[in-house]
Amino acid sequence: MVPADTTGEERLVIVDGDADSVQIAAFERDRRELIRRGLAFGGAVVAAASIPVLLSVRNAFAAGEADKTILADAIRLERIALLAYDKVIDTGLLSAGVQRFAKLIAAHEREHADALTTALTDLGQPRPAQPTVKDIASVVKGIGDVKSQADILNFAIELETAEVAAYYDAQQKFYDAKLLQTAASIMASEGQHLVVLRQASNKPPVPNAFETGSK
Amino acid sequence: MDMDSFLRDPLSRRRFFASSGVSIAGGSAMFLAACGDDGGDTGRVVPTTPKEADAADVEILNGALDLELMAIAAYKAGAATLRGELLQVGKLFIEQEQEHADALTTAIKEARGTPNRAKSSYDFPQLRSERDALRFAVELENTAVAAYIDALPKLTRNDLRGTASAIVTNEAEHLSVLRGALGLSPAPQAFVTGEAA
Image (cartoon, rainbow over all chains, first blue to last red; front, side, top):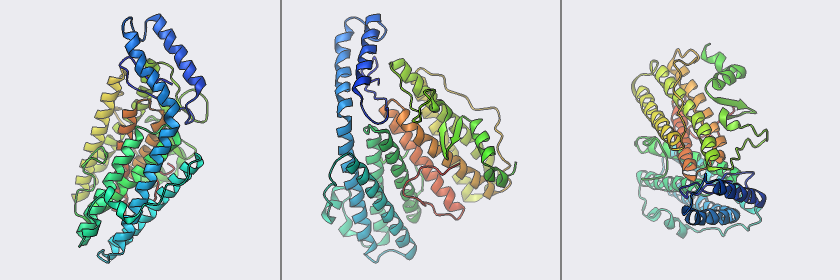
């Protein structure tokens, strides 16, 4: 584990998804040895540089807790997306082709939510409360105002973009290796949803080389 | 080798990707550098100093850079078979793969590493038609997705994980467009992991 370099930048090296007190002790030994040899931090810098290191070690212990919080948030987001797709599918405003794809996306969102829920319960956590239709507006506003397929597509693009952004953020916070990989495979799936929604809206399907969910 | 033979023959594909810094094992793809030498089944690199962490990141990033450079060469080779809208798509994807390569090059230099360079030539299968080019591109993009997802937990810096996830999502989007052009479902699975190559 290498929580910090000489710039104080936080780092975590993932080993089997868990912070390990033995590894942390080993890191501390290595760090002290580096300090003793003057390779890592020099003289007066030591005291200041040690602060983020110690904070990072605490973060490593807390990493498992962070994963649970992020998972719960991701489950809520997926369930909200599922609610939103179910709602727009029922509007009768979609062409047969778009309707078919909306159902496919809804099925994907359900699979994402189920997988994440399994991951959360495997960590000994209860299932998060089921969101309601009112909660959709906490992610993207305006679902009650859609009056055409174009409106729905724009809404869905906003929704998928918000999902990509959430997973992009999670990639920089998740600690467990398997969660990182699962989240990446879901983020990639949301990207593919975006492609089809953009194509249906006559928008460039892949406008950015880095899909981060930024607008 | 023609495209049909290439796609039918797992050994040929393994050899091809191995020559480009990607290992195919057990149906998943990974950057060769990321396999590490720890002998464990996780393949995770466990550096103990910032210098080792940088070195581990550089190895993984260079594996990714190799694949991006190969993808650029492949799209350029395939562009000769493309016309009209698909040619424009091919050109866009070349630009985006180049952006990935540039970002990886910058990250490698920031980690005090030396970026790999593109090979002088690549032994691509024969791309005789638009369909060949599309199928080969699908193969490359799937392999890239699998390799990036394998590599993600091995990167030690959070910002690099963010960048890798943004790239893998873009590659998945390329896959979606390419599959659509081949008449296949653009989003066949809820979890995009890169198919077994």
